[in-house]
Image 1 (tube, rainbow, N blue to C red):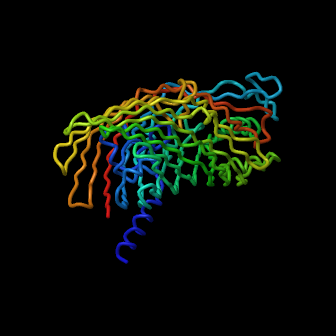
Image 2 (cartoon, rainbow, N blue to C red):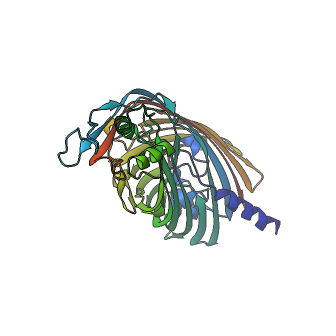
Image 3 (cartoon, rainbow, N blue to C red):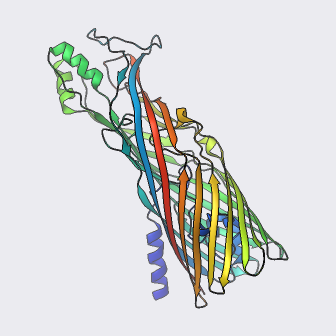
Length: 471
């Protein structure tokens, strides 16, 4: 009974979603045993039940039942230095910059947004729980509860990119039952199902400088400029699958391939527009309506597929090397489109591309009870250029440098620790927001655009710990 209660507690802990960003917003940091090798060759590891995520076929390497719990803490710094941000109106009838308000005031000139620098990075814990049990010599079953995607950025309310993004948070929880089969002594295959629950929230400031200008002209008195706020929330489920192959050679070298399908959760929620009370009162005085409101919204979140080839190769009794190459299908994440009742779609264009990751690791088998690990990896960003780098999801090419160790104590227990520093290239931003921000209001027959310019200085530290028990 005590053993069952402990497993229930660990499962409950694993249900907390991740809120840290890595790899676009994919989180390959499942378990902590692979962190010391920069996750190089993780799909070929056969002694760890986190194979449920990395490669379901590798579960056939387990000779005993096993559960593990892990936590990887990731601390992202995303310091933005503004070089200029503007706003302008585009007349819907002509497609030109420049339009006239209902009271005859020209409002189409380009205006500086203002605002300053901000650090939107945050830290977060990526938890995971995995369980595996051999059914017989030819089959092993497994279960994983983990967070395969996560991202969080929070910027100051007065920063230069506030009209494109303020707070953005994406969390995901995956429940993955898995089964592996041994085809022959060398070849194993695996299959798993993924049920992913996505929970997302994004907010941005709303610019009312044009309403203030109109009110000043109509009332003949000064009107302060106060930002409003728009917040989109949604949650929902999506479903996919994992496939894996593992080939074990006579010298105990392992070759592996794994594939995770794309998933498209359908999120439902609401779109909240908060209008400053002053402007609602002024609009009423001018015979117009401008009120805060909440409307139903829904969106499809296009999560990527992933294909990985990996190896774990023994050099001698003391050393082994790990390597992998991974391709991720971020191209399908071309936009975030929210459909809102009685309002034109809110669209955040991403235009991401498919990416490649390569990793190389080494493990020194120092003693029967202690392994020391090293790793390096290069991870390509899905962002094509400064033009497509959205301020709410900053990303850049990254170089991983990591180390860690595994300590076995007794016959049934093992602790793994890892530490990684990720250097990210400086990320230039020259993004023009394509959202239709003026569609709700009667003042203009125009679309408002925002251009954010500046540079992100990004860096990421990661620490991981894992405990596993076999019996």
